[in-house]
Amino acid sequence: MQSSIEHQPNSSSTFANSVELQRPAEWLRALEASPDGHRALIGRMGFAKASYLLATAHCLAHPLPTPVPTVRELFAAACKLSTFSGMAKPRLAQIVESCEAAGLTVIV
Image (tube, rainbow, N blue to C red; front, side, top):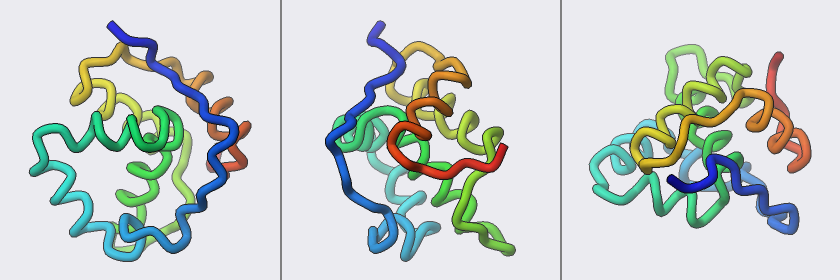
């Protein structure tokens, strides 16, 4: 199995203008329909940022949208990514630390 966390400190992209967050429900459906979508997402962003983006998209697709995921939502997204990508289940502390290091806000 691969390592469950890949931190990419020099990645400075923001999610504010991404299609994933402008049309989250559509993007989530497309991700689910793609056989390699979850692995491609991890490959593009690293595990922690991909987990954060997935959690944020889920939060925005709710009837009462919020742009900042909770720790619980972040961990659920990380577990989902690990399941679909065949990676080991991550530790919550690792995901939170990686997001904090990347400057991503999470509600504790």
